[in-house]
Amino acid sequence: MRDFLPEDVRRREYVIGIVSSIYQRYGFEPLETPALENIETLTGKYGEEGNKLIFKVLRRGEHESSGETDLALRYDLTVPLARVVAEYRGTLPKYFKRYQIQPVWRADRPARGRFREFYQCDVDAIGSRSPVVETEMLAAVSEVLVKLGFDDFTIQLNHRQLLTATLNRAGVEPPLHTTALVALDKLDKIGVDGVFEEMVSRNVPHHAAQAVLDNVGSGEFGSFPDQPGAAAAENLGEIMNLCESTAAAGHVKFAPFLARGLSYYTGAIMEVTVPDLAGSLGGGGRYDGLIGMFLGEDVPACGFSLGLERILVVMTERKMFPPEIEQASADVLLTLFDRSTVPEALKLAAELRAAGIRVEVYPEPDKLGKQMKYASSRKIRFAAILGGDEIARGEVTIKNLDTGEQKTMPHPAVADLVKTSK
Image 1 (cartoon, rainbow, N blue to C red):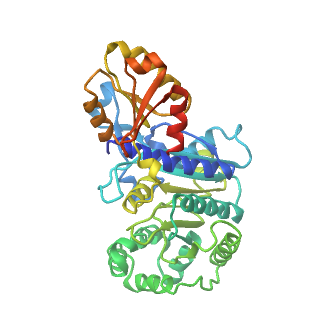
Image 2: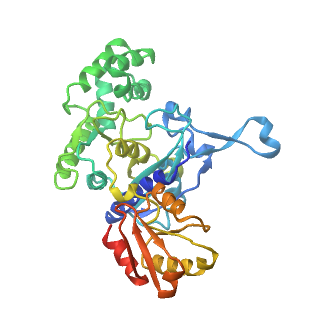
Image 3: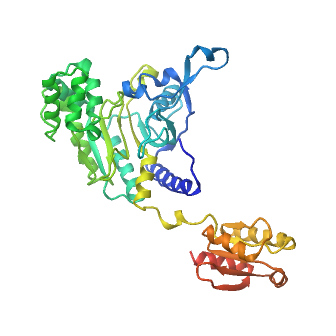
């Protein structure tokens, strides 16, 4: 959990602004939910690995000494969304499309791009099983990444029912499916040999574990005699074909090893990768059964979550932010000569701000050299000098701290000078 200094916040706001604006263009509406959820809402939704990472909250007051928990910090934004859909089903549209950008908390071990408190940028569509839903979602995510400046990302695509069919074909008993997928999901971290060893340690027979790795390693959909496997392969093929007509064209790739560890996925699953990042920039999938845990009937749903923190890490390392995001907090520093000039200085500051110029007023009279040095340290490009002579003439002296050039001009001309020099 971290503090964010001004330059950090500017970068975050830049990314969030692009994400939200593009999601809105695709018809998604904003939603926010509380940081805390009832413990029963969260547990049992993320698989055994996820359950271990939930930050639980002790009961308060006279119950505190019991060590019992009744609340928890939200682990993701998907389960709270499912609760909201179940709770407000009667007032939501038939096809509910929402985006949500809020922090989540996981009791994880911090690493590069991995934190205990981090923001997720989620987009979800509720109410339809059509592959158009996945296609539109992949297109929206692709537009976000392209707008941010990524040109080397891949969206890996797989299907939970395809994996289930593969496990059945390999001889993995159904009670071991979840544990086998948890191991397979760690491929990018521990490699093929590590996945094999973990499957075996989780009681998957040697021959079955090897058969799973052989099957998914073929890189093809394969032919499945069972209906769920065949339907899954057909569904994946349709999504990939539809993507060729959207912003996702050229970015989507079948990834047979992709498993995604969360247990609530039921259909297509997806993950965004870039070459120089261990792990993904985001991921998601179809979860047609999750809302039913709260509502009592299954509701079609599909979602995708972009990891804001990892996006920021990669963009910072690659220097992908535009210059204006890295610039100073103000365009002009308004200097103060003595107390008598303060009212006129504040009046000029108000005029410039009304014209859209960012102005910082030096808070106390001081030597002009010190004020100029402060402006330079803050990377402020212009200093406005308003002494008694300037006030008497209704003028102001503007100094460009980059070039050293200095001009005296009427107040209205200052805003134009600053704007044209950006």
